[in-house]
Length: 92
Image (cartoon, rainbow, N blue to C red; front, side):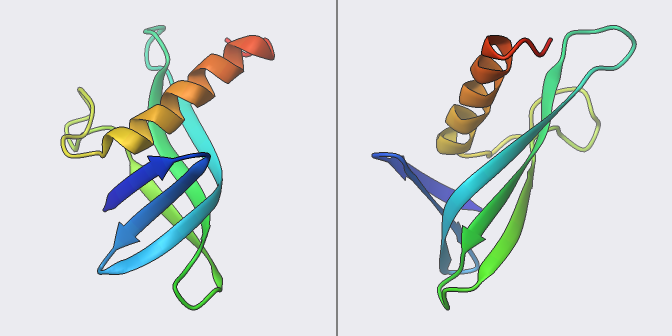
C-alpha cells in the first residue's frame, strides 16, 4: 500500500486504485508492561467508485518485535497525530 498526505487529505493506493481516507482509528497495544506501541491503523475511505471501504494497515512486523518495514511515512504521521492526541484527552 502506498499513500500520500497533504493539506488535510490522505490518499491510500492499493492495487492501482486510489482511496480517499476520511477517518482513521489507530490501535495501540502494550505487552508485559512495556511502553505502548501502535499496532494497526484502520482507515475508512472512499474508493474509486465512490463507495466506502475499510482498509487496515498492520504496523508491527510478523515477528511482533518492531515496526513493519515499508509502511509509508504519511501513515506514520497519522499514527504520531493519534499518539499526540491521546495524551491531550488523558489516554495513557
